[in-house]
Amino acid sequence: MSKFREILRSNGLPTDDLSQPHLWFFSYQNGVRVGTLGLEQYGSLGFLRSLSILPEFHAQGLGSQVVKKLIAEREAFGCAELYLMTTDAAGFFSKFGFQRVERSAVPESIKQTQQYSSICPSSAIVMKL
Image (cartoon, helix red, strand yellow):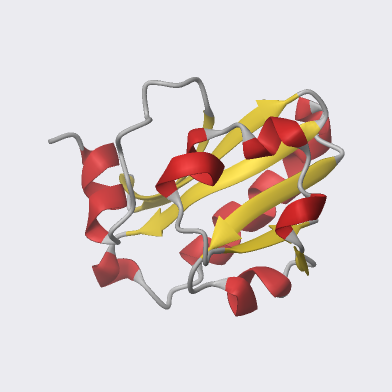
């Protein structure tokens, strides 16, 4: 198993749709990849997915670092708005300015993603920045 898939699976995140094109941001510790965060682009919309840090590196600020990096660089990718779905990290993402939105308010291009339509449970919280 690749280190990339290992990182995702270590936190119970899906790897079924990784063949789709995404931009990936990585977190490193002593030159070793220990975390990841994906960005799917749909025109001027971005959809964050798969923030994952290996469990032994939790609580070291690495997740925050990779989220901050993506937010700082989003305009370079042409992303005016960012969306994400989470079942357990709404408080974490709200620290970066993400706010809950109703599922009915999500743009169609985001609704058509595998993450939105079939991978994330319908109980997942949708957030927007």
